[in-house]
Length: 264
Image (tube, rainbow, N blue to C red; front, side, top):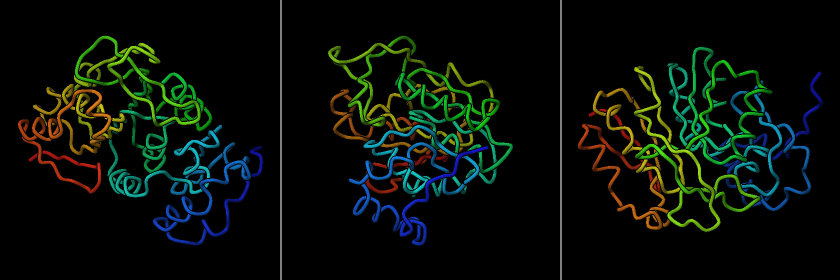
């Protein structure tokens, strides 16, 4: 029998989801230590039967999910709309698995293939998959996705933040992780959604999808352009967009760092 779940702050249960984001950062972001039970088991707002476990107090992503049941409302809403149609979701930079869990719980026919390079996040992600009994629908590939196969230097980031790590050109304070191209990993099937969030390396992931793009086997792409991290990696702004357009994909800004692309 499941233990009782600590109730989230009442204010965060009665306001619209977009307003929850503002209220969380204004009122609760600094109060993680006062709500420890929320981090032990956090049901998803759009799928209360699915929960994320052993979240990390102080971690930005963990705090959002613990207090609100979701992370990044704009992308969550888009994923929920796509999930109704079903299909394959490829989650690059999956972190602890929030979007893969969301995708599979919203439609029983949905599957996810998730790439994550951080050993700590992989462990947390596997725990979430196992405890929600989704091992037959979510495949975790413990590798970085990029523009080549081999190894890459990966900076894990601060111990209290799961989402600040990423690829690095510096060998100091980094670990070596396996790297692969999506062209080499995905079987001959359609990818309904490709979501990329790799802290500046999204362009490299896209460059590793040449065959998938040429064959128009990716229906929707969501990616980010983290300019400071891209500069550290020597990636010129606009490289991803030019490559996608060369392969007959239409790019559109979603505001801020967020972009989407679909076949032209």
